[in-house]
Length: 309
Image (cartoon, rainbow, N blue to C red):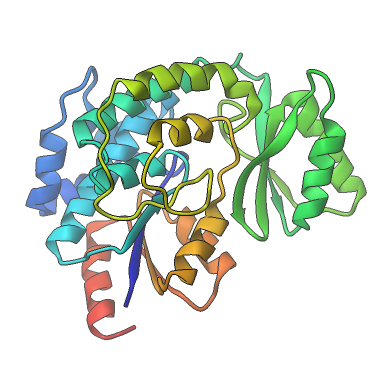
């Protein structure tokens, strides 16, 4: 069995996430208790309110904290991943897991990243839409046709062969969606996000993030990290990769295909949520996929591994 651990991105958060780990796992409790920030991470994770938890300025720190608390419990149980990766924000959890930077530094980065992203674009000026079951070349062509001058639409996420997310300002995304509808695409789902993440509209935000990243000391990964912007493992240039990530497409399913090509046969998604597990199954039905979101999932995971299921 060759395991890869996948870390959840933004959008999967919910009030109460991580609370059962805090109550039932000493190592998870130690992670939460070690955090000192300008807001009470535990309280927002465990008690909300949802309005605060959904605010990008707070969400990112809370998801990173929860992901690392869960990860420490898996390590304690003997899970040793051969690769780590994450979707967008989840990439920072992967980098913490690989000791590229400490949890303290990771929380500082994503706190500032969240504030930068929250203020990057005027409210209501941009959007993201998930396009389902459409040919990728058709989606790419629609984005190109829709983009001219200040009207922008690009691909934000290659989530799975059957799920591609487009992003841009309202005029650009609406135009691309109209073109796709004319071409026979039937299922397009607007995402509940505050702006056009992973688009050229975040160029200025990427420059602000670069300044934050350059102030952080980063080490060579202790575990191979597969990066969003390249879809493969990288050993250096982390500031450049993370700076590009905020304004560039996330190559999630190419990352999964890369890890499978390296022999990975088992993926464990660390919550909150189970979005990534679904994307892995849509990419390759022959690998084993587990989700660890609640403490009981750890016990079920260990039982399944022991029984070879």
